Length: 264
Image 1: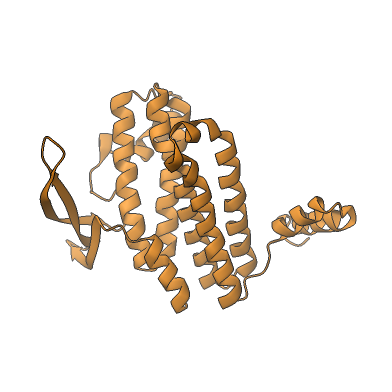
Image 2 (image 1 turned 180 degrees about the vertical axis):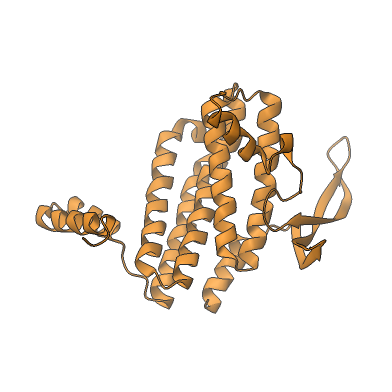
């Protein structure tokens, strides 16, 4: 991990509202000890000061240690429901509970990035992407659905960056390049699909997807400079198609198929 990459991670994965203090162990379980800074606001909206809470999150599983309906997390509970052919009905209250769980995983995901545990950061990102999928499919109210889904580009940014850094540590640079490029395309596609919803939010909404895209591009550029990250086959294929080079596009497709078949 080079200094420039560390600086980028510190810039992207530190939330001033949640200050990581140390890693501790409680009853044999590793936890993050952190400070949560809460602003105190009057009924008229004036800031009166701030309150600092001492909190702890588990490093794995649901961060707060709660077991919703006896399961490891709400996501696990709804997976079980689906496996038993029970279709979730996500009311306003259920959607709020899902957003609360996703927020906990967001906070802890930042701590995993700060601790350079990219595998666990990736897992927390994947957890929240699945929560987005649940709300998209089963939320009763469109507003509840969009309240979490709007953050999909942010979550995918985190998942992809964590996955890529995990692969870089394993010296799997081609796969790392593919993760980052595919994330850029996925964010672009999501932004196009939901352009109307983002535009309805004004400048803040419109800027969210391209900002997340730019962060993935920044890490890609740094990795190319610092560890010689290659250009992914996906990107080369798109470039060949764009310039009308059918022969090169066919060659790349064949190479990708060979990789999928394990080099057979």
